[in-house]
Length: 622
Image (cartoon, rainbow, N blue to C red; front, side, top):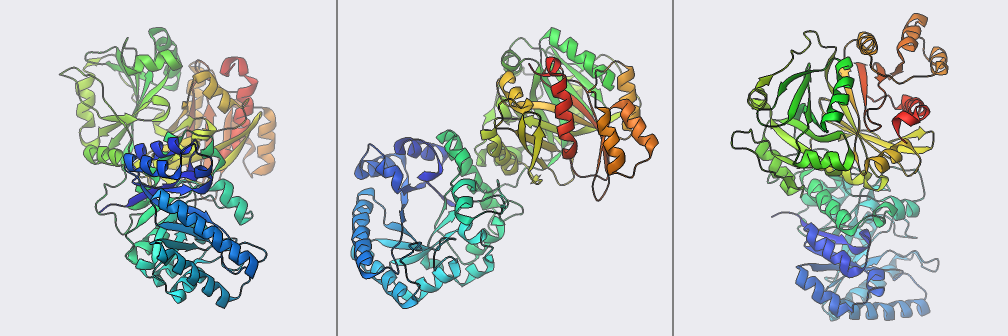
């Protein structure tokens, strides 16, 4: 039996009926009704219950009820009167579970005897109406802010209508050991709420209200937490409760779909396989980037070819049926598609010459498609000729495609699909493989596409960094396979005048902004490209003056880097050299990198690169 999935309506934007429709369409089987969503709805509680029934959604919980326990007598009486009124609403909604948060009232007493008595009375009142109460320790609760204390209270009250609610944020933000969950009896755990979050140094309430995110998008050790819950035998709902300003600005359907994907990711394990993942297809492992496909008109293809040649690429073959050319160097395959119809043609009309597809070499195409289906990643199919090689694909960033190429038959695929030879590849290629692909998107899409890659592919996230653009900050994060054969860097910015945002605006959507190629001798590769006429990015002399003060580098090495506009960084393990072309058609540029046991992406040099591109603004982005 798979995970039972639910989401709190507060997690997404829109009216309550629109939220519920999005939740059902995303694949959830349940939803928590947040009180404010109900209060602002034009539908009554009974009408909401009817709508949920029609949509096939269980109302998993009504929430929240605040400040119940430990109050002085007058406030206590009013709290229990309020509780009875919420019971009335629950009966109309068709749910039997109410979330009661640990008290934050300044009037609340920490007297354990009184808290036990209040929780027992709440259980008695709920049981009299066939209802249940789930007690949750808020991380900022006045007296109860640890799930261990909340469980001790629920255990000692020992009322059948009173149980525990576990929320990952409240436990993991306080670094409560997940091993402590082993003490909880599974029949007393009424529901599990899930949220991830980046690790931030700020007050718990603000952290919770603005920075929660979907499992896999943050930094919490959710695998350990979830496995601890499974080990006690919990069989109930796993329900997302997300507070995030970015999600509230997004579409309800998009956020709901991300939520569903994130729970499926959690079910199988985020950073490692879970202890219940035997029925789930694993995340897709990749052997590397097999090809990058450009959509272009004939005129654009000619201009793009004129930029690829100085980099050492040669057109080696034409497609058997289509107006498609394969360019090659080392292990790098670039495909330029000039077909007058089909997805590539549509992509070119919308975006201009640009990357419309990426092909990844995988060992098991069937398992890759099964994983995509599980994560509700849409497959893409278009008509192919009977003699063409079928390559399955799914929808990726900005309407582009992600192809799954069978690693065992890729040589046969190239021979079959491109039988018409053109030129011969360079015998001693300067560039060896694709090092990484940089994709730029709206800031609001950033976490969604991060989840797309983490949920579909066997990749790990690098730490998120902020890069100083001349016109604002850019958020950047990479995902990469364990062996580094596939690396994607994701970039988004709230600053409308940043080059990142202007790319998205001028490009009419998210897409590939630059491609980095690996080489073993960047000085030789850069020199050859410059001598062959590649327009390169000019780096200021001040940068090299600063290098001399920051690093103990040979002055001759710095002079060579300055002459060729090569940038430099190092980490604890090695060194990194970078060389950039100018942008092609103001859309995409190329990078050459040489890694000497270096793991990063030269983030320290990104502001220098962005400033240099801004200085060439007329030729980069208008």
